[in-house]
Length: 80
Image (cartoon, rainbow, N blue to C red; front, side, top):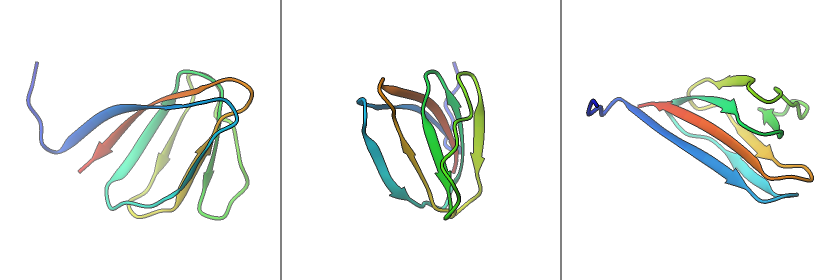
């Protein structure tokens, strides 16, 4: 076990057919999908990294996520 103040870990859980609103924050973020779901970065198209797939959001970049017919579960890491 290690106490850290420069990294935050967590997970997001979205109900079926839910959309997390556009978000933007200073720390860069990395996500790993535990279930199916879609992401959008900046004004780009929605994409599905696939279960076990990941993505990176640079510091301050706009992003959003949404679930399909099943819940979306994603692990995330913020580098603060």
